[in-house]
Length: 160
Image (tube, rainbow, N blue to C red; front, side, top):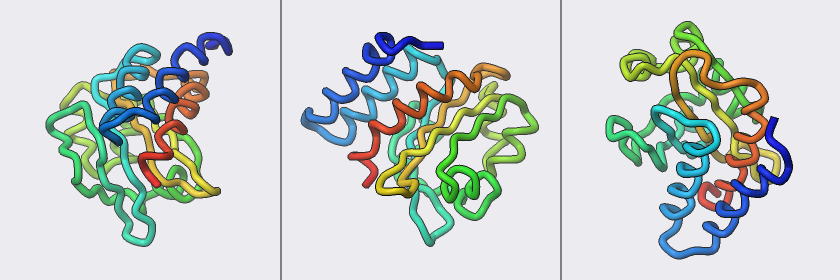
């Protein structure tokens, strides 16, 4: 598990990024860099929750096949009940998990991603967005979710 000193090492640049110009791009890029260093991924997305629509909007992506501004119908899914409604992290580490969770599962799987770690971004008691990392099968652990949740929370100013 990551020590507090190590947590400060990767959280400090994210907090500094919040005060810089060119928002929210600067913060999104800083989060992407921190996640690459801490966890690794094949691709990363930041999603904004759009309550009442059944959708999330992709605000940032490390992958060209996932353009920003696109809507994804996640709000009315079982995954949506856990992450968007319940404000809980979700960890899937298999092909079956990806198929269960995502309407675009075949595209995710075609990129060699059978693992997906999703951490909600919460503000004032509700989920305003999600940080999602995708990688090879069994890439992430429940222990990783602790740090991922902390990193995700730094996205709140960009998603409210």
